Length: 194
Image (cartoon, rainbow, N blue to C red; front, side):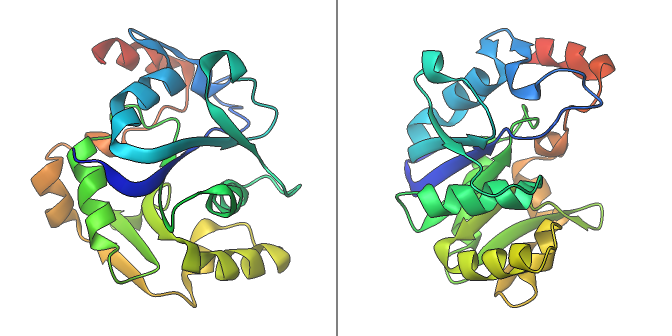
C-alpha cells in the first residue's frame, strides 16, 4: 500500500459493554489490538490518531484525540478526529475491525477523490466506520450532533457521498474480512489468526 496523503482515524471510544473490556486492548500475536492496527497501517498514512475517551495509550507512543463532546457515539469520534487531523482526507476505522485489508482501504480512499465521503456498502448496509471522510463533511457532522442526532449516516444527508458497491469491494477483499468486527468474548479467539 502506497503512502496516502491522509490521516488514519482509529475509533476506540466505545463502551465495549458486550465484550466486557476495552476492545482496543484485546491481545493479538503482535501486541494489543490497537498496536496491531498501527503496525498494519502505520507506514501508509501521514499520521495516525486514536480517538476516544479516557484512553491511556501514552506508553504506546500514540497520539490520542479525546472526544470533545459529551455524547457517546462514533459520530463524536469522527467529529473529533476530523477536527484534529492534519490532512484534508481521513480514513475512519473502528478499532474492532482487526482484519481490515490495506488494499481495500486504499481503494476507498481513491474513491473519495471528488466527494465528501466514500463509504462501502456491504450486504445492503453502509459501513460508515470503514470509510473515507474529507474535512468538508465536518460542518454537516457538527450540525447533526447539534440537533441531537447521533446516527453516523444521518450526517450524510447534505453531503456528496459515493457508495462503494459490494462487487467492487470484493475485488480487493473477496471474503469481506475487513468487516468482521469483534463484539463478544466468544470472538476473541479469532485474533489468533492475525
